[in-house]
Length: 429
Ligand SMILES: *Cc1c(COP(=O)(O)O)cnc(C)c1O
Image 1: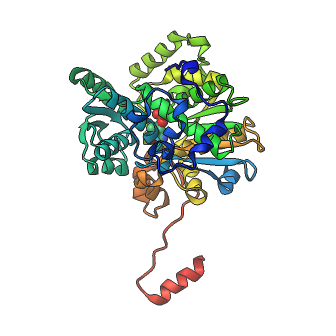
Image 2: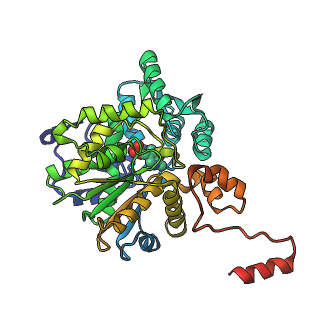
Image 3: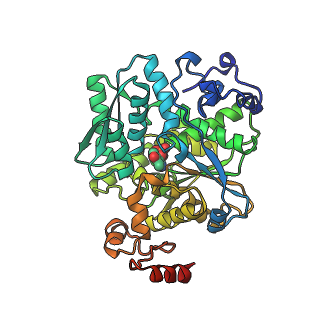
């Protein structure tokens, strides 16, 4: 989506947005998305749909910095789990809803690994503007997310297949029935997600960090972040762009394979189509399917692949992959020293650690890792990591190649006896 900035007349300094802080009773100034609406000027102010999304925090997390290998004060966690539905998806959903209402849509659909559906279901039930139809792969959705969709009253279609199967079906169905599609193929969602970067800059008093590190699934975030920085640079609102690191799960590493291993680049809008088509043809022939504990990024064919290649070009990007072992260990460190996150989010921290070990990220650099979703989204993974029950560990994590829970905080089992309880507390604390 390209704007005519001469017409939109954006502010000439990012400090302009500080004027909104005194107007919290105005929903447009309160929303962490719409207080930046001058930078996503596709909607008239009176048409905006908001439920108060984007009240998120940039946490300076020294305990996590130590794990990652950067100096104290240099590692920041952008905690998007604080959104109304518990993930960053709400940033984009408010923008998509704004557009959907403008065109008079009555039903909205998505395929989802869980968080898009939770967000869609929430916006539908709170605003009453549309009916939610969500498609999920069977057994592929974390319980916290499924619980949300059901509780919020969405029509939930569970199909035999994974995310990519659900995605294909929802595209067909929404075309046939004229249902509004809110997956991140929807460009308005990316407009809303740009504001995650604006809030990062805001929290850093408008200073540009050295690195933005995010998990890569459908690559909507990476694409939106690149677009945000390209526009800010074009408008003269920032002096330089940060570098961007996108981190795949090793079990769902399409971008890593294409960008890092095969060297596919944006190439001024003409990426190597033969290399990309060949990669997917191999994937189909070998029947390779994404498989990772980080279910939110368990995706074979990222829908925003091209836009992400552009973002990587804009931000001198790198792509890495993290194993489920690395992801779960990083997640436990975030849980112990940050506000907590779900497995997919921890790919950002695991990736940052890898890049520090490689010397790509320096220990002095300012690094912002995006924590995309709330800790309580996937309690199964968290409990399996910390459990003393080997069967449960094996079923959830061992089956995905996780060998040990290096940072497990195991519950202490004690008889229901006061003396024994007191002895245990004195022994372990
Ligand atoms: C959707 C989602 C992702 C993937 O984001 P993309 O923009 O599709 O790459 C990562 N983490 C969580 C928690 C998500 O819900």
